[in-house]
Image 1 (cartoon, rainbow, N blue to C red):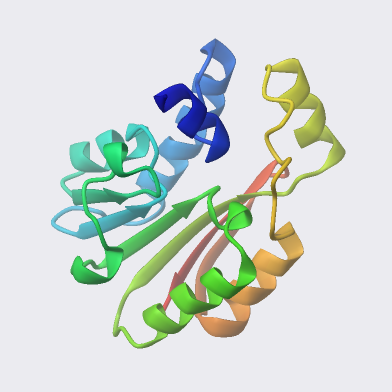
Image 2: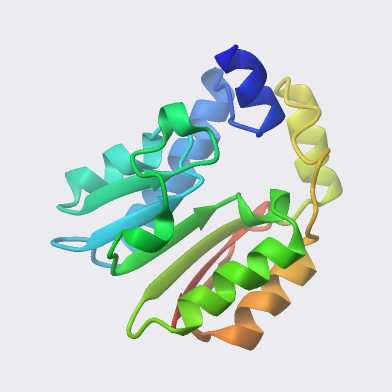
Length: 173
């Protein structure tokens, strides 16, 4: 049952190499800003690997995920947070829902937003295939350029890092 839900909602089932890839991303995210004594919402946090890194940095972290069994909270709107993280998750949410999330965040003051998104280049697709995740971008509802534009047009950019296979945005409301 869980395995089917994980596949349906794109929860990465790690193998040795994807562990290296995602740990690299999680290390970058955990070091891009100060997390000590911050309340963090990991939106679409999956199995909680990023959460573990951020807790080690002194943050209080709650995961909100569409799969209730792995979510710490039922409704992200009811959790008071300083930082929200979207790690390779916005691309699988439809644009209408993303606009609802953006409008919710725009009403908040002094919230930092971290978004990590795949650039979905040929190299991304090749690595995904080699690593046994050939359907990694199958249900993408938002292209990387759309995600980039939605974020930069609605929030103030603090940092943008391009690692070719993915980009990391730090923004604020």
